[in-house]
Image (cartoon, rainbow, N blue to C red):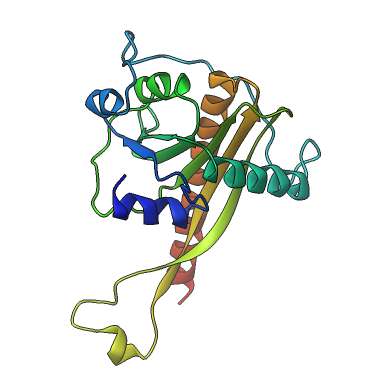
Length: 214
């Protein structure tokens, strides 16, 4: 496991205590992890809808509880398998953090391949998929965060006296159970991608209205 990827997982809330985490971006990465690539690639998957946190179907409290449980138990797993890619037909990046060796090949086959950035950063959508859990749970959550951005050309952060930031939406998908369902994972990432795209359009619209009224 690379030092840089370990820090990326720490940033996502998972610390691989057994020091065995595989960053899976292409079929060769599966083989390095001791797994066999899917015979079907690309793999078409029809999602099975899961609830969004903050709705009548799922409270934020319940989502946060299972999300933290998943992170804690994944941190203790013997091996972590972390497929990365774009949601098919989009440029929205996804990282799946899972202890399931059986799901990883199918998840990689489902996702479009994306550039392998170094050092690895966070993805717009992060999925925590825990296999072997006594309770069944699935859900996703959208939140808005502020991320640092570069100042205008010719200006430094020192000149400004502060770090410029901009709003950005990110998503978290959690699927746990004895044998997590691939269709629920797919439904979660696709619903998340749709919500993120809608948020970006809304922010762009507000920015345009602000410029017009200035």
